[in-house]
Amino acid sequence: MKLKKLLTLIFFFVFFVAFTQYEASDVRHFIKLEGGSLLFYTSTLSEDSVELKPGDVPAFNLNAIWGWDFNEEKFLGVGGGYTSYQNFSSASLFGEMNFFVSNGHFNPYIGVRAGYDYNLSGNLSRHGDVLGEFLAGLQIRFSDYSYFSIYLQSGLAYRQKSLMIPLRFGIRF
Image (cartoon, rainbow, N blue to C red; front, side, top):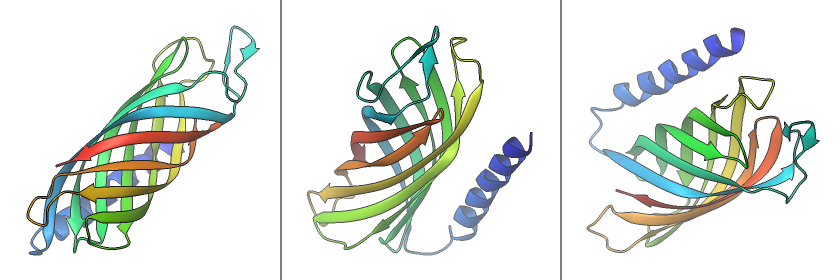
């Protein structure tokens, strides 16, 4: 119960920061759509008393993030996602922050994502777990005049009491 209150407080804080910064002239809205795989690094996920081993079952992951750029150096957003494991699935809600190194056509960044991952199937004994990700990526912009870009990212993710390595491709517009 305390975890749900904490996550609700975090989401309200993200919205508060975003909307108080909205009047700034350098703030732009973006939508990010991404998909990829989560490779198991260590796992405590089990199904019918058979534990999934690292490297056994990659999970397919789709996310949609709505957010704001502040001064082309910081991205703050909220999002949701769907993850499909071998015979069970989960839905997640999260907040995300990205810090960009430069403002060129090839823009490396680091980021953090935190939220909650809800179990959608009854195969696991728990209903959900916290979600945390540390990300590094490369955003590629095709033009100085267009804010459309593609990006690749990876890092380390904690979901459903398992450590995973996300490999994702995304578009941002």
